[in-house]
Length: 408
Image (cartoon, rainbow, N blue to C red; front, side, top):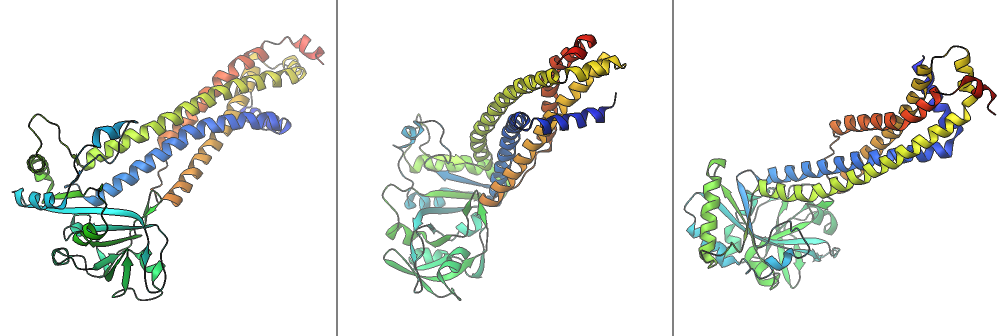
């Protein structure tokens, strides 16, 4: 038996029955795309989150009023009564921590309008209040000028460090030393941040940093809460620093011994786990859609092969009459079925890769092509083709050559 002939026969069958074959190939492609595409997207998100957490540093953790990721429809009820984290609490924490650590307070407000003497921005700017330790804790650095320091915070100076998007949008040439207006206050630009690009579709350069003291006076809302970053001197001291921070904050926030913490401690590991709990839903959804599509595709392929065998009954009779063995007939149609499935699978894989590139370019994510899922997709389409084509192929091999030759 010539296997290449069977493969070419499969291509001829697709050409002769374009609509029928296209629908079948589409079903297989959608199934593989759902499985492979969701896997690619999940791994790209995981890799992007991991890279951003690595930028924060392994020996840094966050203190927040509520978790970064909240699961469940009513989870907000659990956290809504928690008191806000205020700046005096951060100052108390700095005095109570005995270990060598860098403690920084941070609060931001999105969708703000920034005005320069040239033009007003769109309402898409993030304004953040920071202190002198922010740049060290968040691994931020300036390309020009200087960072915000403790003197700026202490004297509530109206100075600002801006991202490159702000420079490009508001200033035709030099931005250093220029004035910008945020609400009712004017700020002098004393630094320009190094470019960081976009993550998950959001630019990291479309922001303005001002002293936390100025932010809390002019920009903070009554419901807003500070975030705290704590950076240990090394990885070995991180665990002890977390425990000490929890104890200090429980005392500062008057948490009774029998009560749970009214704040969240988030390390790189805990944030990764939170994102993993979200991405697993995406992956499960993709697999369910993919498996249902492949089951439907398998039924469609079996029907197509039965129709194809019916149309080629006389051809089968001629082959058997001139000496073709029945196992050759079975193998021929089985190879044709496998070929159709593999074509659909390859289309699905290419669709998944294209979607991955699209999301990575649009949302600034890492592009991960999971080789194991490519192998799995090939295996699953092979299994699908074998199961779907086995009965039609067996039926073709059992045709009576005399009856087949008489068939019209």
